[in-house]
Image (tube, rainbow, N blue to C red; front, side, top):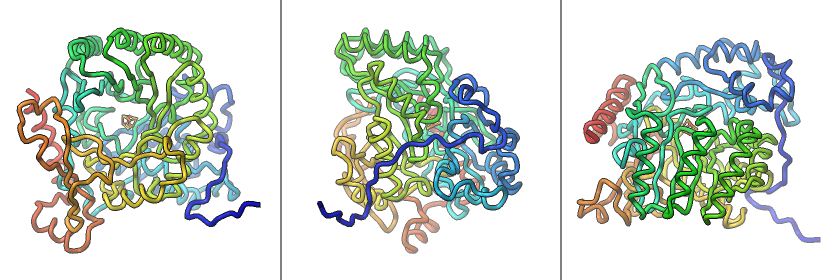
Length: 482
Ligand code: SF4
Protein backbone atom coordinates (compact mmCIF):
# COMPACT_ATOMS: atom_id res chain seq x y z
CA UNK A 1 0.00 0.00 0.00
CA UNK A 2 1.32 3.43 -0.85
CA UNK A 3 1.49 5.80 2.08
CA UNK A 4 -0.97 8.69 2.12
CA UNK A 5 0.98 11.80 2.92
CA UNK A 6 -0.61 14.61 4.83
CA UNK A 7 -0.78 17.61 2.50
CA UNK A 8 -1.97 21.17 3.09
CA UNK A 9 -4.70 20.53 0.50
CA UNK A 10 -6.43 17.16 0.40
CA UNK A 11 -7.50 16.23 -3.13
CA UNK A 12 -10.70 14.26 -3.51
CA UNK A 13 -12.64 13.42 -6.62
CA UNK A 14 -16.13 14.83 -6.22
CA UNK A 15 -19.28 14.29 -8.21
CA UNK A 16 -21.03 17.36 -9.51
CA UNK A 17 -24.53 17.92 -8.16
CA UNK A 18 -27.31 20.13 -9.53
CA UNK A 19 -28.88 21.74 -6.47
CA UNK A 20 -32.60 20.93 -6.23
CA UNK A 21 -34.34 24.14 -7.37
CA UNK A 22 -37.67 22.98 -5.93
CA UNK A 23 -36.26 23.70 -2.46
CA UNK A 24 -36.87 27.38 -3.26
CA UNK A 25 -40.57 28.21 -2.77
CA UNK A 26 -41.03 30.14 -6.03
CA UNK A 27 -39.70 27.24 -8.09
CA UNK A 28 -41.33 24.36 -6.21
CA UNK A 29 -43.38 23.41 -9.28
CA UNK A 30 -40.73 23.97 -11.94
CA UNK A 31 -40.08 20.85 -14.02
CA UNK A 32 -36.74 19.56 -15.27
CA UNK A 33 -37.82 20.34 -18.83
CA UNK A 34 -38.53 23.97 -17.89
CA UNK A 35 -35.24 24.22 -16.04
CA UNK A 36 -33.25 23.07 -19.07
CA UNK A 37 -35.09 25.44 -21.39
CA UNK A 38 -33.04 28.54 -22.10
CA UNK A 39 -36.14 30.66 -22.76
CA UNK A 40 -37.60 29.67 -19.40
CA UNK A 41 -34.30 30.56 -17.74
CA UNK A 42 -34.07 33.93 -19.48
CA UNK A 43 -37.68 34.87 -18.74
CA UNK A 44 -37.35 33.98 -15.04
CA UNK A 45 -34.20 35.96 -14.30
CA UNK A 46 -34.27 37.86 -11.01
CA UNK A 47 -33.87 41.60 -11.63
CA UNK A 48 -35.10 43.21 -8.42
CA UNK A 49 -35.93 42.51 -4.78
CA UNK A 50 -39.60 41.90 -5.55
CA UNK A 51 -38.69 39.06 -7.90
CA UNK A 52 -36.15 37.72 -5.40
CA UNK A 53 -38.92 37.64 -2.77
CA UNK A 54 -41.18 35.72 -5.16
CA UNK A 55 -38.52 33.02 -5.50
CA UNK A 56 -37.27 32.91 -1.92
CA UNK A 57 -40.60 33.27 -0.12
CA UNK A 58 -40.00 33.45 3.63
CA UNK A 59 -36.53 31.88 3.49
CA UNK A 60 -34.87 35.31 3.74
CA UNK A 61 -35.54 37.86 6.46
CA UNK A 62 -36.76 41.39 5.67
CA UNK A 63 -33.41 42.79 6.82
CA UNK A 64 -31.68 41.10 3.93
CA UNK A 65 -33.98 42.70 1.35
CA UNK A 66 -33.44 46.12 2.95
CA UNK A 67 -29.68 45.57 2.84
CA UNK A 68 -29.91 44.63 -0.85
CA UNK A 69 -32.08 47.61 -1.74
CA UNK A 70 -29.75 50.00 0.04
CA UNK A 71 -26.82 48.61 -1.92
CA UNK A 72 -28.66 48.99 -5.21
CA UNK A 73 -29.50 52.59 -4.33
CA UNK A 74 -26.19 53.72 -2.85
CA UNK A 75 -23.30 51.50 -3.92
CA UNK A 76 -24.01 49.11 -6.79
CA UNK A 77 -22.09 49.66 -9.98
CA UNK A 78 -24.03 46.86 -11.70
CA UNK A 79 -27.77 46.30 -11.80
CA UNK A 80 -29.26 43.03 -10.57
CA UNK A 81 -29.59 40.21 -13.11
CA UNK A 82 -29.50 36.58 -12.02
CA UNK A 83 -30.55 33.64 -14.17
CA UNK A 84 -32.29 30.93 -12.10
CA UNK A 85 -29.32 28.60 -12.77
CA UNK A 86 -27.00 31.01 -10.99
CA UNK A 87 -29.32 31.83 -8.09
CA UNK A 88 -29.87 28.11 -7.54
CA UNK A 89 -26.18 27.62 -6.73
CA UNK A 90 -26.48 29.88 -3.66
CA UNK A 91 -26.93 27.93 -0.41
CA UNK A 92 -27.12 24.77 -2.53
CA UNK A 93 -27.97 22.55 0.47
CA UNK A 94 -26.19 19.63 -1.15
CA UNK A 95 -24.04 18.69 1.84
CA UNK A 96 -24.96 16.54 4.82
CA UNK A 97 -26.27 19.53 6.77
CA UNK A 98 -29.10 19.90 4.24
CA UNK A 99 -31.34 22.91 3.92
CA UNK A 100 -31.07 25.62 6.60
CA UNK A 101 -34.41 26.51 8.16
CA UNK A 102 -36.30 29.57 6.90
CA UNK A 103 -35.56 32.91 8.50
CA UNK A 104 -32.43 33.56 10.51
CA UNK A 105 -30.59 30.33 9.67
CA UNK A 106 -31.14 30.53 5.91
CA UNK A 107 -30.45 34.27 5.86
CA UNK A 108 -27.12 33.77 7.62
CA UNK A 109 -26.17 31.05 5.15
CA UNK A 110 -27.21 33.31 2.27
CA UNK A 111 -25.10 36.18 3.59
CA UNK A 112 -22.08 33.84 3.85
CA UNK A 113 -22.59 32.22 0.46
CA UNK A 114 -19.60 32.74 -1.88
CA UNK A 115 -21.63 33.05 -5.08
CA UNK A 116 -24.09 35.45 -3.43
CA UNK A 117 -21.19 37.60 -2.25
CA UNK A 118 -20.26 38.65 -5.77
CA UNK A 119 -23.46 38.13 -7.77
CA UNK A 120 -25.87 39.74 -5.28
CA UNK A 121 -23.86 42.19 -3.18
CA UNK A 122 -25.53 43.95 -0.25
CA UNK A 123 -24.67 47.19 1.49
CA UNK A 124 -23.27 45.52 4.61
CA UNK A 125 -20.74 43.57 2.48
CA UNK A 126 -18.94 46.77 1.55
CA UNK A 127 -16.30 48.48 3.61
CA UNK A 128 -17.16 51.70 5.37
CA UNK A 129 -13.57 52.83 6.11
CA UNK A 130 -12.34 52.74 2.52
CA UNK A 131 -15.31 51.84 0.28
CA UNK A 132 -13.29 52.93 -2.77
CA UNK A 133 -9.57 53.24 -3.27
CA UNK A 134 -8.56 56.88 -3.94
CA UNK A 135 -7.20 55.71 -7.30
CA UNK A 136 -10.33 53.76 -8.30
CA UNK A 137 -11.66 54.56 -11.75
CA UNK A 138 -14.71 53.61 -13.76
CA UNK A 139 -12.65 52.30 -16.67
CA UNK A 140 -9.77 51.26 -14.47
CA UNK A 141 -7.92 49.40 -17.25
CA UNK A 142 -8.30 52.36 -19.65
CA UNK A 143 -9.69 50.09 -22.33
CA UNK A 144 -11.68 52.96 -23.78
CA UNK A 145 -8.51 55.01 -24.17
CA UNK A 146 -7.08 52.21 -26.31
CA UNK A 147 -10.04 51.77 -28.64
CA UNK A 148 -8.75 51.50 -32.20
CA UNK A 149 -12.35 51.77 -33.38
CA UNK A 150 -15.36 52.00 -31.08
CA UNK A 151 -15.31 48.96 -28.76
CA UNK A 152 -12.10 47.41 -30.15
CA UNK A 153 -9.32 47.66 -27.57
CA UNK A 154 -5.84 47.28 -29.03
CA UNK A 155 -3.62 46.98 -25.97
CA UNK A 156 -1.20 44.18 -26.83
CA UNK A 157 0.95 43.93 -29.97
CA UNK A 158 -0.70 40.87 -31.51
CA UNK A 159 -4.15 40.66 -29.92
CA UNK A 160 -7.29 42.74 -29.52
CA UNK A 161 -10.48 42.71 -27.50
CA UNK A 162 -13.68 43.18 -29.50
CA UNK A 163 -16.60 44.35 -27.37
CA UNK A 164 -19.48 43.38 -29.62
CA UNK A 165 -22.25 44.35 -27.22
CA UNK A 166 -22.67 45.93 -23.77
CA UNK A 167 -24.99 43.38 -22.11
CA UNK A 168 -24.77 39.95 -20.43
CA UNK A 169 -27.30 37.33 -19.31
CA UNK A 170 -26.04 37.90 -15.75
CA UNK A 171 -24.43 40.87 -14.06
CA UNK A 172 -21.51 40.37 -11.68
CA UNK A 173 -21.13 42.92 -8.90
CA UNK A 174 -17.39 43.32 -9.48
CA UNK A 175 -17.55 43.70 -13.27
CA UNK A 176 -14.41 45.42 -14.50
CA UNK A 177 -16.36 46.90 -17.44
CA UNK A 178 -18.91 48.50 -15.10
CA UNK A 179 -18.31 51.72 -17.04
CA UNK A 180 -20.01 50.34 -20.11
CA UNK A 181 -21.72 47.02 -19.41
CA UNK A 182 -25.28 46.65 -18.20
CA UNK A 183 -28.03 49.05 -17.21
CA UNK A 184 -27.30 52.30 -15.42
CA UNK A 185 -27.62 52.18 -11.65
CA UNK A 186 -28.48 55.11 -9.36
CA UNK A 187 -24.70 55.57 -8.94
CA UNK A 188 -23.39 54.90 -12.42
CA UNK A 189 -24.75 56.26 -15.67
CA UNK A 190 -23.32 53.84 -18.19
CA UNK A 191 -21.36 54.90 -21.20
CA UNK A 192 -23.25 54.10 -24.40
CA UNK A 193 -21.74 53.02 -27.69
CA UNK A 194 -22.40 55.72 -30.26
CA UNK A 195 -22.33 53.54 -33.36
CA UNK A 196 -24.97 51.04 -34.40
CA UNK A 197 -23.91 47.43 -33.67
CA UNK A 198 -23.62 46.46 -37.35
CA UNK A 199 -21.54 49.56 -38.14
CA UNK A 200 -19.26 48.98 -35.17
CA UNK A 201 -18.73 45.33 -36.10
CA UNK A 202 -17.91 46.33 -39.68
CA UNK A 203 -15.41 48.91 -38.44
CA UNK A 204 -13.76 46.29 -36.23
CA UNK A 205 -13.43 43.86 -39.13
CA UNK A 206 -12.07 46.60 -41.39
CA UNK A 207 -9.45 47.46 -38.77
CA UNK A 208 -8.42 43.81 -38.44
CA UNK A 209 -8.15 43.40 -42.22
CA UNK A 210 -5.90 46.47 -42.29
CA UNK A 211 -3.80 45.34 -39.32
CA UNK A 212 -2.22 41.96 -40.13
CA UNK A 213 0.00 42.08 -37.02
CA UNK A 214 -3.10 41.14 -34.99
CA UNK A 215 -3.48 37.35 -34.89
CA UNK A 216 -5.73 36.83 -31.86
CA UNK A 217 -9.19 38.26 -31.18
CA UNK A 218 -11.07 38.02 -27.90
CA UNK A 219 -14.70 38.30 -28.98
CA UNK A 220 -16.39 39.70 -25.96
CA UNK A 221 -18.83 42.20 -24.55
CA UNK A 222 -20.58 42.03 -22.28
CA UNK A 223 -21.13 38.38 -22.98
CA UNK A 224 -21.42 36.94 -26.48
CA UNK A 225 -24.30 34.75 -25.27
CA UNK A 226 -26.49 37.85 -25.50
CA UNK A 227 -25.82 38.30 -29.19
CA UNK A 228 -28.38 36.49 -31.39
CA UNK A 229 -26.52 33.42 -32.65
CA UNK A 230 -26.93 34.36 -36.34
CA UNK A 231 -25.24 37.72 -35.67
CA UNK A 232 -22.38 36.11 -33.77
CA UNK A 233 -21.90 33.46 -36.44
CA UNK A 234 -21.90 36.10 -39.19
CA UNK A 235 -19.19 38.06 -37.32
CA UNK A 236 -17.12 34.91 -36.74
CA UNK A 237 -17.40 33.88 -40.38
CA UNK A 238 -15.97 37.23 -41.44
CA UNK A 239 -13.25 37.00 -38.82
CA UNK A 240 -12.34 33.53 -40.04
CA UNK A 241 -11.96 34.90 -43.56
CA UNK A 242 -9.09 37.16 -42.44
CA UNK A 243 -5.84 35.28 -43.08
CA UNK A 244 -3.91 36.84 -40.23
CA UNK A 245 -6.37 35.69 -37.52
CA UNK A 246 -5.13 32.45 -35.89
CA UNK A 247 -6.89 32.42 -32.51
CA UNK A 248 -10.45 33.38 -31.64
CA UNK A 249 -11.62 33.33 -28.05
CA UNK A 250 -15.29 33.76 -27.22
CA UNK A 251 -15.80 35.37 -23.81
CA UNK A 252 -18.89 34.12 -22.03
CA UNK A 253 -19.71 33.75 -18.39
CA UNK A 254 -23.06 32.34 -19.54
CA UNK A 255 -21.43 28.92 -19.80
CA UNK A 256 -21.50 29.07 -15.99
CA UNK A 257 -24.50 31.34 -15.36
CA UNK A 258 -26.78 30.17 -18.17
CA UNK A 259 -25.37 26.90 -19.56
CA UNK A 260 -28.78 26.24 -21.12
CA UNK A 261 -27.87 28.84 -23.76
CA UNK A 262 -24.74 26.99 -24.82
CA UNK A 263 -26.35 23.54 -24.84
CA UNK A 264 -29.37 24.66 -26.90
CA UNK A 265 -29.44 22.63 -30.16
CA UNK A 266 -29.37 25.64 -32.52
CA UNK A 267 -26.32 27.10 -30.76
CA UNK A 268 -24.48 23.76 -30.72
CA UNK A 269 -25.20 23.23 -34.42
CA UNK A 270 -24.00 26.75 -35.19
CA UNK A 271 -20.85 26.18 -33.18
CA UNK A 272 -20.27 23.02 -35.23
CA UNK A 273 -20.40 25.06 -38.45
CA UNK A 274 -18.03 27.71 -37.10
CA UNK A 275 -15.48 25.21 -35.78
CA UNK A 276 -15.56 23.21 -39.03
CA UNK A 277 -14.60 26.37 -40.94
CA UNK A 278 -11.98 27.19 -38.33
CA UNK A 279 -10.42 23.72 -38.52
CA UNK A 280 -10.28 23.88 -42.30
CA UNK A 281 -8.39 27.17 -41.98
CA UNK A 282 -6.15 26.10 -39.11
CA UNK A 283 -7.68 28.58 -36.63
CA UNK A 284 -8.29 27.76 -32.98
CA UNK A 285 -11.71 28.73 -31.63
CA UNK A 286 -11.97 28.51 -27.84
CA UNK A 287 -14.35 29.69 -25.15
CA UNK A 288 -13.12 31.67 -22.20
CA UNK A 289 -15.53 31.51 -19.31
CA UNK A 290 -15.67 32.99 -15.83
CA UNK A 291 -16.31 30.81 -12.75
CA UNK A 292 -15.26 31.96 -9.32
CA UNK A 293 -16.42 29.14 -7.06
CA UNK A 294 -16.78 25.36 -7.22
CA UNK A 295 -20.48 25.59 -6.33
CA UNK A 296 -21.13 27.10 -9.76
CA UNK A 297 -19.88 23.98 -11.54
CA UNK A 298 -22.95 21.77 -11.86
CA UNK A 299 -23.93 18.93 -14.22
CA UNK A 300 -25.70 21.48 -16.46
CA UNK A 301 -22.42 23.38 -16.85
CA UNK A 302 -20.46 20.19 -17.52
CA UNK A 303 -23.05 19.07 -20.08
CA UNK A 304 -22.87 22.37 -21.98
CA UNK A 305 -19.06 22.22 -21.99
CA UNK A 306 -19.16 18.64 -23.26
CA UNK A 307 -21.52 19.29 -26.17
CA UNK A 308 -19.51 22.37 -27.20
CA UNK A 309 -16.26 20.38 -27.22
CA UNK A 310 -17.99 17.65 -29.23
CA UNK A 311 -19.08 20.37 -31.64
CA UNK A 312 -15.40 21.04 -32.32
CA UNK A 313 -14.23 23.77 -29.95
CA UNK A 314 -10.48 23.77 -29.52
CA UNK A 315 -10.60 24.38 -25.77
CA UNK A 316 -12.62 25.89 -22.94
CA UNK A 317 -10.64 27.86 -20.37
CA UNK A 318 -11.64 29.52 -17.14
CA UNK A 319 -10.65 33.06 -16.19
CA UNK A 320 -11.87 33.62 -12.66
CA UNK A 321 -11.46 36.66 -10.46
CA UNK A 322 -9.80 36.49 -7.08
CA UNK A 323 -12.34 37.85 -4.60
CA UNK A 324 -12.26 38.13 -0.82
CA UNK A 325 -15.03 36.10 0.78
CA UNK A 326 -15.52 34.11 -2.43
CA UNK A 327 -12.35 32.20 -3.28
CA UNK A 328 -9.48 33.75 -1.27
CA UNK A 329 -8.13 30.49 0.11
CA UNK A 330 -6.03 27.72 -1.47
CA UNK A 331 -8.86 25.25 -0.77
CA UNK A 332 -11.50 27.34 -2.52
CA UNK A 333 -9.26 27.91 -5.56
CA UNK A 334 -8.19 24.28 -5.83
CA UNK A 335 -11.72 22.93 -5.29
CA UNK A 336 -12.87 25.12 -8.18
CA UNK A 337 -9.95 24.13 -10.41
CA UNK A 338 -10.50 20.42 -9.81
CA UNK A 339 -14.25 20.74 -10.41
CA UNK A 340 -13.46 22.43 -13.73
CA UNK A 341 -10.67 20.11 -14.78
CA UNK A 342 -11.96 16.77 -13.46
CA UNK A 343 -15.65 17.13 -14.09
CA UNK A 344 -16.30 19.70 -16.77
CA UNK A 345 -13.29 19.51 -19.10
CA UNK A 346 -12.66 23.23 -18.59
CA UNK A 347 -9.03 24.25 -18.19
CA UNK A 348 -8.22 26.48 -15.20
CA UNK A 349 -6.30 29.30 -16.83
CA UNK A 350 -6.21 32.62 -14.95
CA UNK A 351 -7.36 34.22 -11.77
CA UNK A 352 -7.34 37.98 -12.11
CA UNK A 353 -6.86 40.26 -9.18
CA UNK A 354 -10.02 42.34 -8.84
CA UNK A 355 -9.62 45.63 -10.68
CA UNK A 356 -9.64 49.04 -9.02
CA UNK A 357 -13.22 50.06 -9.76
CA UNK A 358 -15.33 52.12 -7.33
CA UNK A 359 -16.69 50.34 -4.24
CA UNK A 360 -14.68 47.18 -4.78
CA UNK A 361 -12.37 47.38 -1.76
CA UNK A 362 -14.21 44.66 0.17
CA UNK A 363 -13.50 42.25 -2.70
CA UNK A 364 -9.90 43.18 -3.43
CA UNK A 365 -6.80 41.43 -2.09
CA UNK A 366 -3.29 42.78 -1.80
CA UNK A 367 -0.56 41.72 -4.19
CA UNK A 368 1.16 39.92 -1.30
CA UNK A 369 -1.99 37.89 -0.60
CA UNK A 370 -2.26 37.01 -4.28
CA UNK A 371 1.39 35.90 -4.35
CA UNK A 372 0.81 33.66 -1.32
CA UNK A 373 -2.21 32.08 -2.97
CA UNK A 374 -0.25 31.45 -6.16
CA UNK A 375 2.43 29.72 -4.10
CA UNK A 376 -0.14 27.65 -2.21
CA UNK A 377 -1.86 26.23 -5.28
CA UNK A 378 1.29 25.13 -7.12
CA UNK A 379 1.96 21.44 -7.59
CA UNK A 380 -1.53 19.96 -7.25
CA UNK A 381 -2.90 20.38 -10.75
CA UNK A 382 -1.21 19.41 -14.01
CA UNK A 383 1.09 22.23 -15.11
CA UNK A 384 -1.09 23.09 -18.10
CA UNK A 385 -4.11 23.42 -15.78
CA UNK A 386 -2.41 25.34 -12.98
CA UNK A 387 -3.92 28.80 -13.17
CA UNK A 388 -1.75 31.88 -13.11
CA UNK A 389 -2.83 34.59 -10.76
CA UNK A 390 -2.44 37.84 -12.66
CA UNK A 391 -2.61 41.52 -11.98
CA UNK A 392 -4.09 43.55 -14.83
CA UNK A 393 -1.91 46.62 -14.48
CA UNK A 394 -3.42 49.82 -15.93
CA UNK A 395 -1.73 50.77 -19.24
CA UNK A 396 0.30 47.54 -19.14
CA UNK A 397 -1.89 44.45 -19.22
CA UNK A 398 -1.73 41.11 -17.47
CA UNK A 399 1.35 40.38 -15.38
CA UNK A 400 1.88 37.28 -13.25
CA UNK A 401 1.83 38.42 -9.65
CA UNK A 402 5.45 37.37 -9.12
CA UNK A 403 6.60 39.56 -12.02
CA UNK A 404 6.33 42.71 -9.93
CA UNK A 405 9.35 44.97 -10.45
CA UNK A 406 9.24 46.74 -7.10
CA UNK A 407 6.78 46.60 -4.23
CA UNK A 408 6.27 49.15 -1.45
CA UNK A 409 4.32 46.98 0.97
CA UNK A 410 3.97 49.75 3.57
CA UNK A 411 2.00 51.98 1.19
CA UNK A 412 0.59 49.13 -0.89
CA UNK A 413 2.04 50.36 -4.17
CA UNK A 414 3.47 47.89 -6.66
CA UNK A 415 5.56 48.95 -9.66
CA UNK A 416 5.49 47.13 -12.97
CA UNK A 417 7.31 47.32 -16.30
CA UNK A 418 6.30 46.28 -19.76
CA UNK A 419 7.91 45.14 -22.97
CA UNK A 420 5.58 46.49 -25.67
CA UNK A 421 3.70 49.63 -26.56
CA UNK A 422 -0.07 49.89 -26.48
CA UNK A 423 -1.86 51.50 -29.41
CA UNK A 424 -1.72 54.94 -27.75
CA UNK A 425 2.03 54.91 -27.14
CA UNK A 426 3.47 54.88 -30.64
CA UNK A 427 5.27 58.19 -30.02
CA UNK A 428 6.06 57.59 -26.34
CA UNK A 429 9.81 57.01 -26.07
CA UNK A 430 9.57 56.29 -22.33
CA UNK A 431 6.79 53.70 -22.54
CA UNK A 432 9.13 50.75 -22.04
CA UNK A 433 11.28 52.24 -19.30
CA UNK A 434 8.48 53.78 -17.24
CA UNK A 435 7.14 52.14 -14.10
CA UNK A 436 3.38 51.57 -13.92
CA UNK A 437 1.55 51.21 -10.64
CA UNK A 438 -1.12 49.12 -9.01
CA UNK A 439 -2.48 49.74 -5.51
CA UNK A 440 -3.31 47.33 -2.70
CA UNK A 441 -6.52 47.86 -0.74
CA UNK A 442 -5.69 50.33 2.01
CA UNK A 443 -7.34 48.31 4.77
CA UNK A 444 -4.75 45.55 4.18
CA UNK A 445 -1.81 47.92 4.88
CA UNK A 446 0.09 48.29 8.14
CA UNK A 447 -1.08 51.16 10.36
CA UNK A 448 1.71 53.44 9.09
CA UNK A 449 0.59 52.91 5.49
CA UNK A 450 -3.05 53.55 6.30
CA UNK A 451 -2.08 56.75 8.12
CA UNK A 452 -0.04 57.85 5.08
CA UNK A 453 -3.02 57.46 2.76
CA UNK A 454 -5.21 59.37 5.19
CA UNK A 455 -2.82 62.30 5.36
CA UNK A 456 -1.21 62.38 1.96
CA UNK A 457 -3.47 60.92 -0.59
CA UNK A 458 -6.63 63.01 -0.58
CA UNK A 459 -8.64 60.05 0.65
CA UNK A 460 -11.92 59.14 -0.91
CA UNK A 461 -13.71 57.81 2.11
CA UNK A 462 -17.12 59.29 1.63
CA UNK A 463 -19.71 58.10 -0.78
CA UNK A 464 -20.06 61.46 -2.53
CA UNK A 465 -16.32 61.90 -2.90
CA UNK A 466 -15.94 58.42 -4.32
CA UNK A 467 -18.56 59.05 -6.96
CA UNK A 468 -17.08 62.44 -7.84
CA UNK A 469 -13.66 60.88 -8.29
CA UNK A 470 -15.06 58.08 -10.42
CA UNK A 471 -17.04 60.51 -12.58
CA UNK A 472 -13.94 62.66 -13.06
CA UNK A 473 -12.02 59.64 -14.32
CA UNK A 474 -14.75 58.98 -16.88
CA UNK A 475 -14.78 62.61 -18.04
CA UNK A 476 -11.00 62.61 -18.39
CA UNK A 477 -11.18 59.44 -20.44
CA UNK A 478 -13.91 60.83 -22.69
CA UNK A 479 -12.00 64.08 -23.19
CA UNK A 480 -8.90 62.16 -24.17
CA UNK A 481 -10.77 60.09 -26.72
CA UNK A 482 -12.38 63.05 -28.51
S1 SF4 B 1 -20.28 38.41 -17.32
FE1 SF4 B 1 -18.33 39.50 -17.52
S2 SF4 B 1 -18.86 41.40 -18.64
FE2 SF4 B 1 -20.77 40.52 -17.85
S3 SF4 B 1 -21.09 41.49 -15.86
FE3 SF4 B 1 -19.98 39.59 -15.46
S4 SF4 B 1 -17.83 40.21 -15.45
FE4 SF4 B 1 -18.97 41.86 -16.46
